[in-house]
Image 1: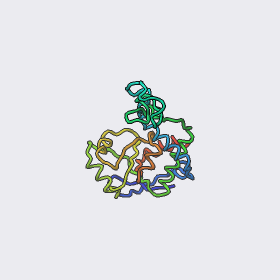
Image 2 (image 1 turned 90 degrees about the vertical axis):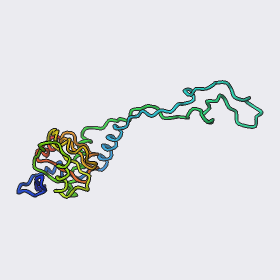
Image 3 (image 1 turned 180 degrees about the vertical axis):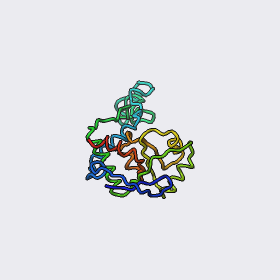
Image 4 (image 1 turned 120 degrees about the vertical axis):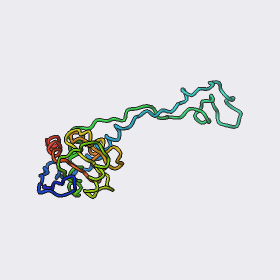
Amino acid sequence: MKISVHNIKGEETSKKVQLEDSVFGIEPNDHCIYLDVKQHLANKRQGTHKAKERGEVSGSTKKIKRQKGTGGARAGDIKNPLFRGGGRVFGPRPRDYNFKLNKKIKKLARKSALSYKAKENNIIVLEDFTFSEPKTKQNVELLKNLNISDKKTLLVLAEPNKNVSLSSRNLRKFRVVEASDINTYDILSAAKLLLVESSIKIIEDVLKN
């Protein structure tokens, strides 16, 4: 699949790049995408939730009323979960939500997500560029030149670029990542995918095998 290369002024250059069909043109596997996104979101959970159960609530353990003859249900101490201020039954406890996912599944999920973007013509390739200084205005102009100011955008760089990263921090719908760090969730959550030329080879090298 061939795609035109744009410059930061939003103009289409005479250059074209070839996107590998084995990465950007496969038949997407929705179940792999589901599993990868599920793992990504699970890994972000802190798992620090905690509620006090009957044995952890402070209070007397004295039996509050006699067992029979009151006309009501029998009751033990004041920490009974049925009473206000009592413990919680089967409350949440701290836990780790992480789960294992095979590398091949994660690779297939990323290739599937990239293939969806390519199929929907939501990939834009940019010439390699940098900013002389960190200024949000430069990134705003870049998005305006490409007519994607109102779109949620993911910019994929080949290597860390401090000025470009700092210029994007104040933009709510704009995110910068390195090619080696892209994940299925970020690809799918962005409406437009901006790939700098040099990042394409890195993505293909990581996902081809």
